[in-house]
Length: 185
Image (cartoon, rainbow, N blue to C red; front, side):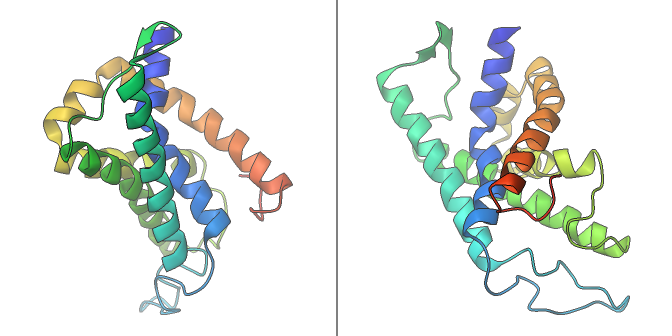
């Protein structure tokens, strides 16, 4: 059980970091340029910016590269064999897909939240905690289906789905208290 949990966390690290770093380093010009759709609502809103998208992707990739560096020196942690992102250059594509896909998942749900009439920061339980996981998984499966299915086994995927909401809520609370998030969810 510990091995499955550690594997899940290790594989998801490049996808876990982009949203929080996008919030920290974001700001500036919104991705939607302030435009609205026929429904009169913003496409994404002011919280989704070019700087956040780039910074989040870069930070997720840097973390993945640090993981690869660690793997070049040590393949275990606490005696548990860690999974690899693959050989270069394919590993870069996997890491990029995890990081960028996480942000795409978050962007997609922001789009749908605007269509539902929810304002920026309004909670949508379940969706808020897993939208980035779905985005990361879909994009990673598209670019590296064999790697994805070999690593995200049923139990590893289940561990991600169960542990991610707990991590998401706790990191959002920390972000709220240090002033980088306006709401604690």
